[in-house]
Structures are given as C-alpha cells and as structure tokens.
Image (cartoon, rainbow, N blue to C red; front, side):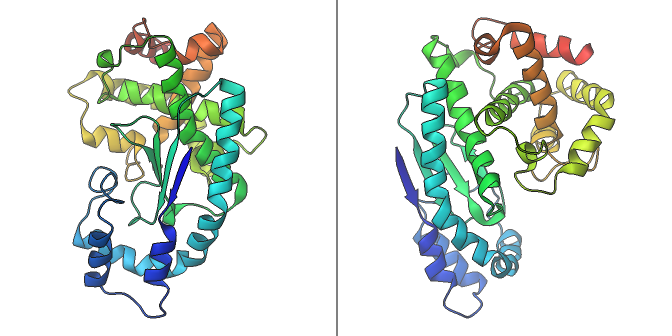
Length: 284
C-alpha cells in the first residue's frame, strides 16, 4: 500500500497569512501538474471561474483540510486492512491525497482500478465520515478485484452507460455499509450529517426515480448531462438533490444480494446481462 499525501504542500502554499491571487493558484497547480493530471479536467473543470470560486472558499475549509491531512492516512490503512480480511482484497493499493478546486471529492482512476484520489477540500473531517468515503472508494477496487478473480473480460463493460454506473456505485455503497456498519443511513451517501432530506426525497419518490432513470437509460444516448444528473455533485435538477442514482443503485444491489447471495450479486456482471437485469428491476 502506498499513500501519497500532497496536502502539506498546499498548506504551505495557502498558509502564509495573506489571500492568494488567481495567478498564484495557477502557478501552484502548474508546479504540481503531476499531482493534478488525473483531477483536471475529468473530475473538475480547470476554468478561471472555477479557480476564482475556489479562492473564496479555501479559508473557511483550511482547518478541516489540515485535520484531514493528519487523520486520513491512518483511516486508509485501517479500511484497507478491513477489506483485506473481509473480502480478501489482494491488490496493491495506491492512495493520493490532494486539495482540489471543489470538484469531485474522491474517485478511482479510469486507467488504474487500484489507484484512489481524495480531493479533501469538500470532505467532512469527522472520523466516521472519512471512514465511509474511504470504504466507498476501496469498495470500488474490491468490486473490480472480485470480478477479475473470476476471469472478467473487462473489454465487454460499457463504462460510459448509466446502467453500469448504477451497478458500480450501488456495489461500492453496499460494501461501505458492510465494512463500516451501524451508522445513520444518510452518511453512506453524503459522507456527512446533512443527508437526511436527500434520503427522504428518494424514499418518497422512489417509483418516479425508477421511471425517470429508466427513461434516461432507454431513450437516446447516455450523455454527460444524464451522468451529471444522476451521479455527479453538479446534478440534481429532477428531484432537487444530486447523485440520486447512488441510492437507486444501492437498492438494486441490495435486491440482487437478497436474490443471489453476496458473492454472486457483486460479480453478476461477469457472464450475465447486467443491463437487462437492471431494466427488469426498474420496471418491477
């Protein structure tokens, strides 16, 4: 396991006592271009508007950023050990911690499904909250690893379709519940204490959520607008809350676990028509 913590360099940059300019932030990002190569532009647009907005937010998050820099490495070690014991996670993990510009808060890289980035400026510093988001991201790696051990042909996976994302995000959330049990339900989706209205909205509108997602999945191409609506922090125009697809995906995976058992459910996309099964579930 390798943990690369790039947060101290940002703390040194920002903590000099005076506000930074757009040009200074640009210079910092350019100086650490390697660190941000997988962050910009896929997980956050690098625009002047984005950077100017970030400059106004860093001060209020500075102490949280410093706290997370100190606590997250130990949490990553703890949760890696949990997954190794509970799910036989046997891949060499790589973690990269950085301060971003308020885009995605955590992600597994597309070209290396065992490398996880944490952009900590949007994260809660609370211990349990950090454990859950760490468990979610390691859950992705574990989910992929389980299929690989079964001989998964990854060339058959349509990574760009929302039905695939529904399954992968549902699986990671399911696994986070198994490895960090006993917390309030919304924490597994928002990684903070503010998610109760979000989960309530989903429960009250579940039939309509299924219908709208099914329409988006079957009518026209799955494009970035749909991806953002259901799975990105920048979405949420349908129901007033972003990433509603995470809740729907978790319901589907829990349904699959109840139907097939845990191992078969989590490896269901190997040798089965995953998309058709999800469509059947959404119609049910």
